[in-house]
Length: 121
Image (cartoon, rainbow, N blue to C red; front, side, top):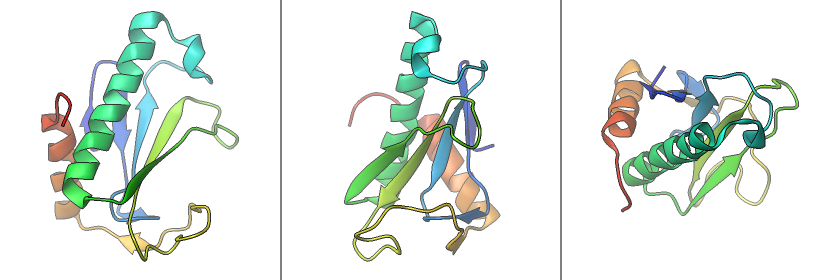
């Protein structure tokens, strides 16, 4: 786990499709964002944007991609993909195949940045 907040946790493993990949997971089991009560729903989005902002500061991407599917795991979670010029998926959709190996130090730095992130840029 990279970070934990009251409504979500943020995860990302050693192997990842992109160097700055992270996933925000709702603590309460729902399949759709609209199934959360208002306070939880707002917290889910705020936590997701907090993580995205931290990743953007760390990786300086050209664009942040956000994905919520739930086809494989029917539990609310949002994938965050900082995209950059020349990434392995340039011009095509991102797959879940691991392209990058991150060190424990990389993950510590990402987690610390997410935990310390707050407010708009």
